[in-house]
Amino acid sequence: MEIGLYTFGDAGTSQVMGETVSPETRLRHLVEEIELADQVGLDVFGLGEHHRADYAVSAPAMVLAAAATRTRHIRLTSAVTVLGSEDPIRVFQQYSTLDNLSGGRAEVMVGRGSFIESFPLFGQELDDYDALFIEKLGKLLAANDDEILDWPGTTHTVPVPQRGVYPRPVQKNLPIWVAVGGTPESVVRAGQMGRPLALGIIGGQPARFAPLFDLYRRAATQAGHDAGGLETSLNLHGFVARTRDQALENFASTYAEVMTRLGAERGWPPMGRQQIEAAAAPGGSLFLGSPDEVVDKILAAHELFGFSRILLQMAIGAVDHAALMQAIELFGTRVAPKVRKALS
Image 1 (spheres, rainbow, N blue to C red):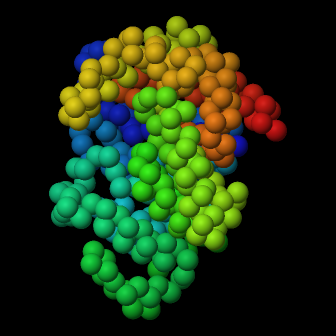
Image 2: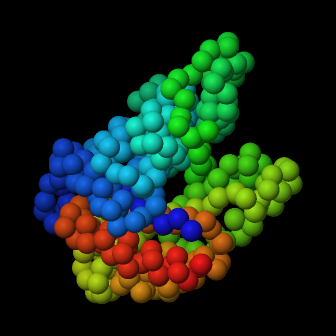
Image 3: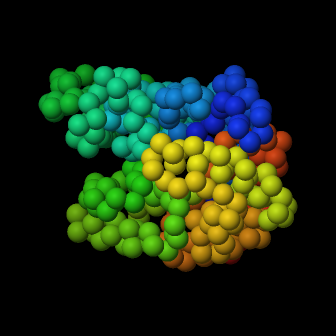
């Protein structure tokens, strides 16, 4: 099983810590974090795409390219690319370039996007949210499959008559994952297409989401794909420290701030320490605690889902960089080896 991290590159001023993290500082720290994740043996590092002041990463491929030259083994992926507001050919070219820079370690994780700022920014209509994603994913997959693209065009994509798309990746094809947030229709579509599936869970009990993986595998089988050969990922929030109390101290206040701020935009209730501790309990969605506690939660989740990859988002809000670097080290040296040994 592959074990890794993802982040959105949170920047701005923490209302809890009172510290301001500039995009310059956050991006420099972010490359250091990816480099450390590679050194401690983690398998994957993903970067999300956002277009707002509280996140420093609006161009994940550029940040991953900076990290590519300072890493040797770790796979580098978007998490996610908001494909509906992107040009699929440029997405392919960016990540194919990253694949060449990294020696064949690039991936793309595409999704419809839970943040919508990119749509008006790039002149896309939110009324076309679903159609944009479906049509552009088809074009991206076509460019990935064939060097000479012959695309007829759709309502939201322009035709490409027999044109080469370059550079080609080092890998035969770029791994292109479909990320979903729990919508059954999206899960079924990913299965029907035979694409690897990444399921994001940021609240509730993970056990409630396990039937979605069964639904995905049934849809893949019915469409003629080998469901047993398809990769699946669970993407969750979490934090690792030497003790559970230290993990809560390093993570809880900034996490509560971010989730409360986003909740005010989306109609969620405010988050406090009590809710965080409940989410960090054995059946909760927050994978937080000592290395052994996080190992136990990963193994319990694996028994439910049977996934082939798990990614944690630990850098949520203005988390102290030194504490985050220690968390990455513990995740790579204490958590990952025990999980791999248990599943071997």
